[in-house]
Image 1: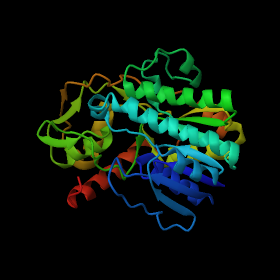
Image 2: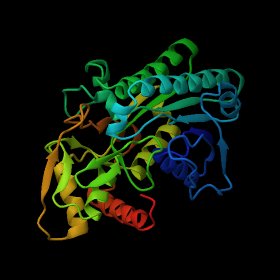
Image 3: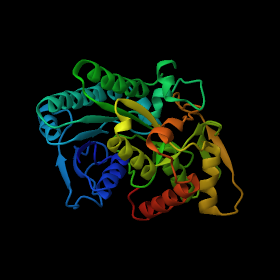
Length: 339
C-alpha cells in the first residue's frame, strides 16, 4: 500500500512513517519544517520513502500527492506543549483549519480522480478535555461538553470534517485519538516560548522531557505545574504508531473512531518521581508546586476496550521504560548542546 503522511517530520508522524515502512508499505511524507526546522530521520534514505518539502495548505500539491496514494495519514498541524495552547490560541484554530480544509479538499478530489481509498485523521485526547466519564469511551464524543481550549475545539472540528466529508462525498475515514505520546526525538519547537521553571529555563514542550531536563540540570526541589495530581495515560510513540498502522490496514476500522492509548494511568507527581529516581537513585525526592496553566486538564483516562476488540491493539511499553528512554535521550541532547 502507498500512504501519504502529512506532517511527516513531526513527533508522532516520525514513529508512524518508520512503522509503515517496517511493514512493507510505501510512504510519501510531506512537511514544511515549520515546527522544528529541518530535521533528519533515520528512514529518510529508505528505498520505499519519498519526502516532499511542501505546505499542506497547497491544495494542488496535496491533490497531486494524494491521487497517487491509497490512503492518507493526516498528522500535519500546529501543535506544542501546554504553554503553546495559551500562546497561540487563535492560530491553533485558524492555521489548523486551513491545513485541515486543504487536506480534505485534496482527499475528496483524489477519491474522485485517483486511487485514494481512505483518510486517517489524527485527532487528540484533548477532544475529551471536558469529559466527566472515566475511563472515557469513544461514544462520549457526542455527550461530553465541547473542549474549553481552542486546540481541543479544533481537533473536535477535525472529526467533524471527517464525518461531513463522508456524509457528503462518500470519503471513507478513520479517526484516531492518540493519548499523551511519549518518546524520543521531540526537540525544541521554533515557536515555543522559553520560560523559567524554578531556576531552569526551558521551552515547555511536554511534561516528560521537561521533567527530565530539570532533574538532569540538578533542580532540587523539582518544580511541577500544579499539585501533581493531574492524571494522564503516557503512551509510547511506537505503540501509537502500531495502532495507527492497524487503523490503516484493517477493514474493520472503516468509518469508525478509536482511542489509542495505554490503559495505565499515572499522576504527574508519580511521573516526576520516576524521572527523579532514574537520575538520582535513592536521593530524597523533593518537589514544589508552581501555578498551573488554565488548560491543564486534571483527568484524562481513555477507555481502550474498543481498539482492543476491533483492532487487536494494546499498548505494550510501560511508563517506566519510557522514562528511562527519554531521560537517556535528553541527557545526550543536553550534552550535545541541542536542548
